[in-house]
Image (cartoon, rainbow, N blue to C red; front, side, top):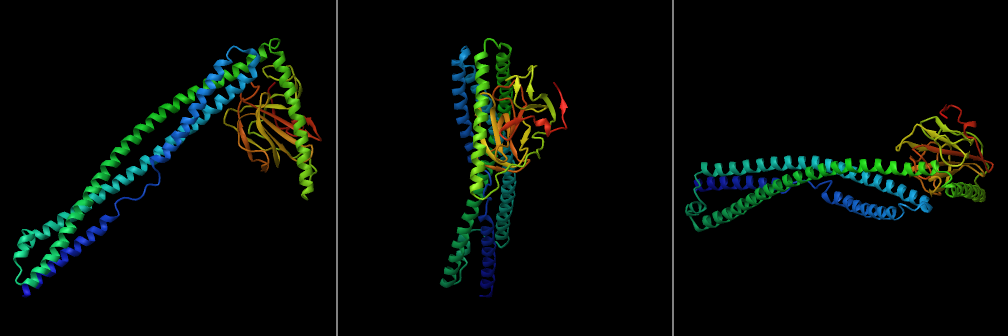
Length: 403
């Protein structure tokens, strides 16, 4: 009888060991922070951008030889550049996500492999323990029962052990499948990442070509002034319409602020440089336009020494009253600083603010570029005081002359 009790304690100990093993195996792998679905969402956006790209290509083909629609053609070229820039950002986001997903999968794979090894070792340890106790088979355990009550007790223990055995096997199989899936996912992510990197190179080359075409068209207009005189006159008229609208909007905003109990008088001066470069390529007022384009009565200054990625900052605190595209200014933003006092920032590659948005001095308004009537990346900057445009260099004195 004492021997039976000793054997029963051995079985209970083995059962306890298996229960611990089962608990350990429940938490197989942590939930992924990043999934393929996140990248698939970016690919869906890329599909929309590609559809827009084809649409613009068709429109540009239709206007290829129509000189009367040159401004519309330039607008489509600017949109094409913007579309390709968006595609580049999308692909860069995909590459970053793939890098994160690859790192994450590698960690999960190592974790799964470690758990599989531990699980297998525990199972082997259990088998060795049974062999050391001389348990040849479940049936031999049952046959050693010395009473019916003992037989029932042994049967219950064996059923529990058999269930635990199956759970251990199932958990091992689950881990092995998880490892196989992770390995396949890892290889696929690496292949997709390399494909995205190749696409990025292609898109950047395409962007350079599109920018060159847009600049070439603006230069063609300027070089053939007689042929495009009507177009140049329309650009001048558009700028004047825009200026009149700016003065009106600035007055309306000041009136609204006054009605709300806010000050509406503009404190003139106090501007900072809108970009890091202080190189002036075209001054305010009359100019012979040597390499510059647009009206020979320049309403602002052109700041060179910038590319397609330079941040444009608010020269003074105020409220954005215009953020849009025009044939002359391209992507441009206007900030009102009080009644009759505004600053204008033109030819942006992209705008970062919307009309109605309050900005502090130094806030980013957009990125420099060459949209609209422009022959290369620069910032056209205007200051209006008391409703009239003035020379910005009255305040921005620390500059380099390059005309």
